[in-house]
Amino acid sequence: QVQLVESGGGLVQAGGSLRLSCVVSGSTFRLNVIGWYRQAPGKQRELVAVMSVAGNTNYADSVRGRFTISRDNAKNTAYLQMNSLQVEDTAVYYCNVDVLSSSWEKMTTADFRSWGQGTQVTVSS
Image (tube, rainbow, N blue to C red):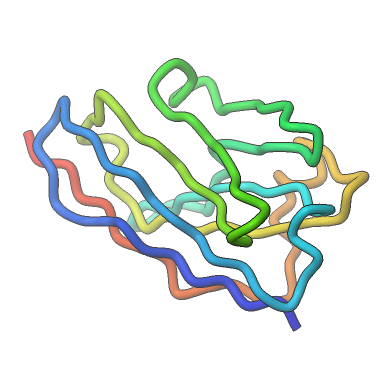
């Protein structure tokens, strides 16, 4: 079973930066599509960034140009560098992984058997 452990969240002022990490076990990480999600209070979980096995990336419009997804296959770890943070970015952030053939559309469904505990990001004005 896939296990995901997110970390790196915290409280930051608007305009600041954070780097989130996600350690993945129980999966062949180097063959996985990775995705970062977030869920704000009272809202549905939304996909914010995806990286393919080949390193291709895609982002939600709300974060494009500010967030960068990356991976270290040797460490089974995914990262989300978040710059120019806005109050609207406040949420619990999660990662997940899918099969090599996955896509942004499929990742959007967030239909996964397991999730990590997430990491809270709070941006103050």
